[in-house]
Image (cartoon, rainbow over all chains, first blue to last red; front, side):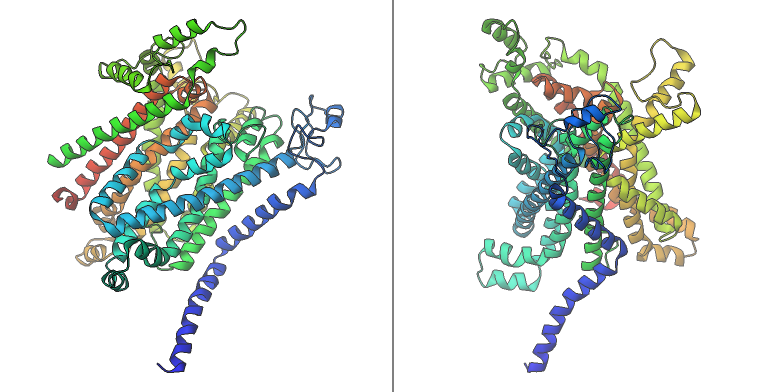
Length: 312
Length: 324
């Protein structure tokens, strides 16, 4: 092969990536989503440095006793204002809503991200194994998927809430991931079933490459775009599941906070003191919206021909 | 016939396994003994044990033995006793219709309006209708059910204030001590918000998928053939397009039913409906193993029934499936 041709090939591999990036950035809603998510992430990371108050009510800066004196509403409630440093107001006990919202945002983002990484990995492994091996393995694994889909994950997680609430939020992440991978696994499976008939997989098989290696080195890398898209969308789904559980007291629990538990606390008096839940609720919607816009933008960028989005 | 029988056998097996798993998880994760500890005056251990044994929740008995007792009752139609020594069956009967109303209306309205909006959006792609509903469904799908419910409540109170009388009620099933037509209207006023908060998500969900599926069909060969043989666009769409485009929705119907049940738990607790979802939350919080298991059984049956229905519907609409 001449050097010229090689260079051309190099250009083409480069240009595919460039093409995807260009397509993504030409998509207005995807760029809006990315901008919003970057802003929200920056807020979550930098937020604690913007306020003298802390989310932890047991700490020195957790409660503002002046709020009790200033409050026109009774208790420690004060409306949002920049003068006294409570950008989002204060709660009934005098806690700073801004500091708590930032903490909740951090927690929800972190949980969403971790759950998406775990559940997409499980989905990739199970789906690819089932689709590649077919036969009995496939039947067994798909039956497991069916079984896990019978009971809404919300039900199981609520029942198990005692376990993970006593042993910390990392177990919550593991359990959320354990009941969140099934639908992605089905999609991965159907893609693997068509990939396994392709020449490069066949060649690898006939060369005696072991199954585990074919799946990890040939099948999964070839579904990278699908996994990236689904992984992104799973972040939003995971955040919704987590906040839902926390809203009912089955997820992240006091003293720690998540966006869900903050909204739950705020709703009791949502009509009279809207700042108690407005910001956490707004940030939650904005985060999930931004993530789904990015996910759909990625899909359009990777595969501009697809109209039907996720094929199952 | 063989198709349906086979699906039904699988259906039964999954219900049994799911319920067993549900019972065992609940029995090991929930701790009914907790309810009696820390009381003042303290409850004697013997009393606790005898109460727990009576309701078949004593953690000193082996789990499998308790499970055996529970199954023995369930087979005979007895779901056991709640932690408060009341009949689970009674509670079940009182609550099931509350939830059913919500679930049936929610699923049907969600599917029907979702499919309708999806089809129109596809036919009028990139027009005003498509864009409006496209963006709205994005926002709705990013909003958890509980937030939709709270915002609707907000909105309803605002409207009521503007109108000067109560158009939307935000708590309960109906106002007590009324009857006849008045009761009917009153129940409707109570029903609008909970049903809406459950339905909006469904509409957004179905409309997005239906739009995609309809777009695929619109570009397909068989629709062009239908036009070529002389059908008008409308005839071709309704006779040949819609049937194919609705097919994938049947599968989503089964999946989304589980989500709907979870959503009902939020809606019911926010709007003060004493249905199955609200019961579930209460049962988990009071370590009520038998009630939790009864709800798990109910959910498994509903979800699988929805799946079964989806299969039968697919077979009815798509002759290719029946041959397999």
